[in-house]
Image (cartoon, rainbow, N blue to C red; front, side, top):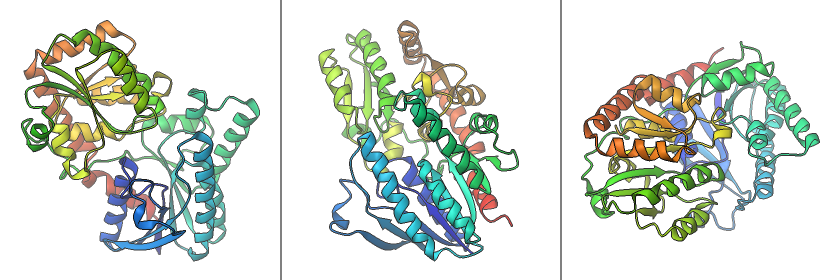
Length: 401
């Protein structure tokens, strides 16, 4: 039996998906399973090694990695084209799949359903890993408005779920969403994303990264991640709140990352004449524990329309370094429920500017509260979301006879 993991993004790409899939593949290989990754050639700035190549085969930690070229554009239509090209390559790879093999398809894209059907005809077992609810997210964000296209996408979604032997969802809210769409409860299993708690752990606030970035003598509120349209809509509210703290030289808002909407966010900060907002590029992954530990509060922004359809992996990373979490989301979201259950953070709607400012001020003047929230966050993630707890759950689903 061989385990095939189909994921569009893999190391050395930035982001949670490449890291999680690498940790899962390495874990499975360490358990003795023959494991292959089917992914894409990395986007800039990691693409130079693969210049002029349509595909590349590599081996890392006993895991075989097959990379295929798609395209690099970040436009919505360009992304759809990339998904289509990746699906083409994936179907081509299926000639290697044998009866008894297991395929883990990380969704999106929905087009991977075409792979599932062909794999099942060959006698393979298909497990879907649903990371976002599509097309719901596209509909809620307004990217998909045409009624006929919406109906077609929803029909494809139901068809894809029908092809799977098992569907892994990352939260109870996701499970409820799919159950309402008629997916059999026997197919559904909740397995959250995880965090490597041996790597991501608390460091002192005064550390090498904090000193290098001049964060030591500041009360730092930090966001680290991709700056997408969804996160931008909330982060711009943070900039508006930052206006109220311009006269306080000790408060600093730090935004780490890249993304399609970063230029707009930088421009807005400049227009507001904000000297208390620092933009940084993505930092090397090996420095992430010290980077996050240089903060006093970590920010999890969620677009209100998508709060029930997404659980960002960065939440678990933040909790692992033992810092309090400020969830910028509605009280019924999955993120808010996790923070309440863990007692590791607070939530506030980003639109409620006065309340958001009050919460920031309260955290700043209460180091004992920050310490307590951070400690509880760390204990909670160790108990429920560590790689040692979650990865065996994936193994059990994938190799079940």
